[in-house]
Length: 119
Image (cartoon, rainbow, N blue to C red):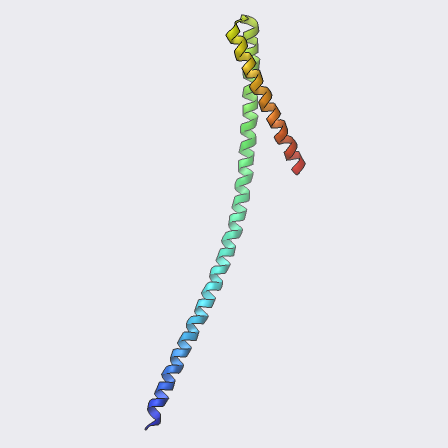
């Protein structure tokens, strides 16, 4: 009978050890699953970022083109008004519009040349 209590203690210790090892295995499996999910999210985020960057580039190109068109229209219209009226304020407005158009075209030329260099 003296063997029974030590056997029971050994069995309890074995069950505790098995439970502990099972918990470690479960934790390892969960950490591997989590690592795979992190890798998946990173991949999805890279794809999403690339798509967003492409859309933003397209929008920026469209806005720049529209700005150039508006500046051209404004500079031509203001120059015609200034030539017709010969009024100093109209001349000043035409000069400002022409300067803004030239600045925009110069900046756009730099952007276009660097974009061509990258492709």
